[in-house]
Structure formats: C-alpha cells, structure tokens
Length: 264
Image (tube, rainbow, N blue to C red):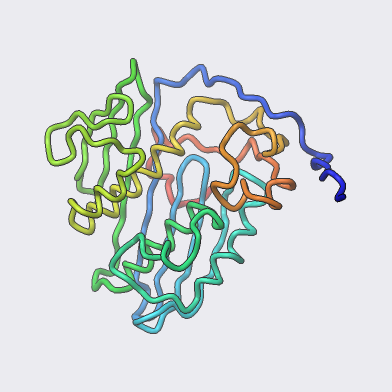
C-alpha cells in the first residue's frame, strides 16, 4: 500500500478574498501572431494572469520545433508544460485553430500555451505578416457585462452579455459563450472571427479571477483549490501536488492596454 502523498511544505491553506474593486474595471487579453519568415512564427499572449511567447518553426507543412517562454504564470509549475507542448513537433499545420486537439489531449497541457500554439499553426499558413487579437471583458454589473473584441485594432465584436448569453443583435444573439461556443463559432464564423471568438471564450474563464484578490493567494497549494482537477497541466496529477500559487504576478490592464505584450 503506497503512502499518502504529502502536500508541499511551503503551501498554505487555500482561501479566497473578494475584490472590493470588482465592477469598476475590465480584463484584457492581447494575442499577436507574426510570420517572422517563411518558416518561423512568433506568437505572443498576455493578460492579467499570463504572459507567454512561442516560437514555432515549420517546413510549410508540419511543425519542426516549438520553443516556449513562460514570462508570467499564476502557478509555480506552469512553466513545465512547455516540455509537453514541445512533443507536438511533427503535427501538421492546419487552417483550424482547434486542430491540435486531434493530436494531443488539451487537458495535459497548459491551456493558454496550447491555445496560443493552435493560433500560431493557422498563422503559419497565412500570407499576412501580422495578426493581432484584443479583447476587453468588462466587469459584470447586475449580471450584465460588455465584451469587446478587436482584430488588428478594428472592433469586430461589441457584445452585451447577460450571464453567459449574448444579447446583442446578430448571428450570435442568444448564443452562450460557455460550453458549445467553440463548435458554434467554427460552424458560423469566418476564420478571423472564429479565432477572435476562441480568444473571447478563454478570456471569459480567466476574467472571473478579477472577482478575487490574488495577492493573498501567494504560497497557497492547488490541492485545496476548489477548481475542477485535471483540467490542465498544473491541475493534474502528479503536478498538482507541487503546484503553488503566485500572488504578485497579476496585472491590471484596465487603463493601460498599451502595456500588453511588454511583459513588465
């Protein structure tokens, strides 16, 4: 009979503290994709909780190599996911940003690294030198929130959500941005809008962290975190047993979108 694993000695009990400023700001995420040359894509993402840079090398048909820089992460273990992502070398390029799921279980990866690589894979097949996605998810007030999405500085989505359902007129009216949204977007939106919609969907999940203060979470172990286990690299066994929260790595870009992708 194996011994019960011991929690990291540096971890303190998990507890959450409400953010008294919630309702007065917004969550922002920026993704920039660049074809550096015919065989190299530079993909960068930054938001309140994360900062990643991926260099994708390819031969025009498949991935040759993947290099990841974890520039800002919420847990001590997140950087280790780059080794798992690197195993996707050899996977074909695709015009679908969701294609990687056919080659590897997304839950075994850092969700945000995996998403960013999926966007880099599609950008490798484009002639455009650069593509940039920006989203701003305003804090919910009385169950209603505004979500704005831009492509290369041009507003494409300006939605009002009640709960998780889009109320704004258009093909997306009455569509939930939660489960099933990615499949709906893939069937109904052109590629650029599809990719922006996927950034929005992921951002909706991360934006909930604005409801709590992250600084007091410094040193808390993920084993006690009420979040569903097994959803990503750091929340999966055995990594979760050594995963500890950072508290000081959070950023508030509400009034400073120009700081995104500066990784400061």
